[in-house]
Length: 98
Image 1 (spheres, rainbow, N blue to C red):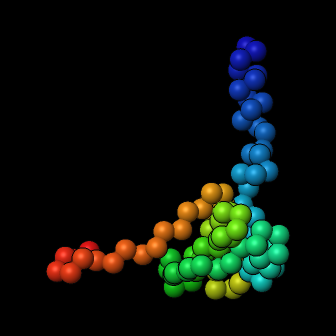
Image 2 (tube, rainbow, N blue to C red; image 1 turned 90 degrees about the vertical axis):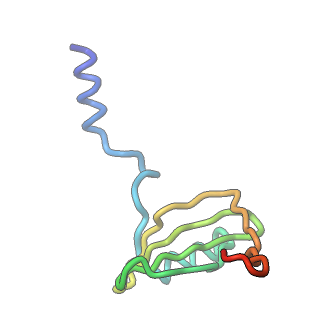
């Protein structure tokens, strides 16, 4: 009975705050990424016609952020972390398809 009550209690608790997605206006989020973490926009691409995926990186601290932005300007941090490693692009060898 105690085990069932404990499991029920765990199921009823909300997820930890860090598991919740941070969303807001893109302008405000990227301003914070630049000011607080020193991150710069390093690449982006379209996931679909209405969603942009961006990578923000700080070369000095190694932090990184993956940001999704909708066409209406709402942006959400999808993932973030540390120890980013930036690799230079590889050049294909002559006569070899990459």
